[in-house]
Length: 318
Image (cartoon, rainbow, N blue to C red):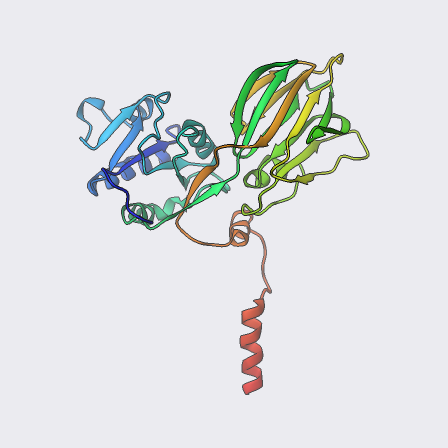
């Protein structure tokens, strides 16, 4: 990666509700500043980490989360699980600051490093041994009549769900301005390839490699013959309308973090996001390997083309 001019600065975001994450966070801050790299912290997280703002290292600064914390930062070092990375994506959406996750959660599909590789991760940051990968996002608009009542974004998914457990949600789905089907359902998930291993996966949707540019739509428990997961062009506009005149209200969830209430008559439009999320990659491992590792998939018995050629060549020489 090419070097940039000016002082180097890294935003460190830590899941301070976990002691293990706090320990790793303090160690990373100490290591980065020891290498002359400035560290930016959210003021609240600095307090949670036990760092007295009156006696901080001169290379450490604190900011408010509403003050574009990712501005002028080389990257964001996120210490936690995928939920922490989704939070980081929210905090840095306007600045598109690259995100580097250290996984202290469970599966950690978005994270690049594990807890036992923190020293190697810091070394890669110091030496700029990383690449940046762009991930497709969703821009989401909620309308009531002709009025736009909310706009937001999602990295994983935007899900329209029923607000009351005992009532089904009545919706009509639309692709590129044309009606596709009416469903009585628990909801509809609109996902990105990045989110295909998250809620989309749990809902029975397909796993899509991150390099594929596409939008996904998956109905949730739809009472309809045509209710299958769909893979749609990235240039398309998806829409879900909560049918007016029905008792069922809904709620929009984006990445499980941001919500919007959806009364009957609400219309939700989903399109490719104008700002991709940028993820830092330290290793050029194939996505297949990530799937195998994260889901602990059995590959026993695999020999592979190269291995077969080697074995066949050896047998021919014998």
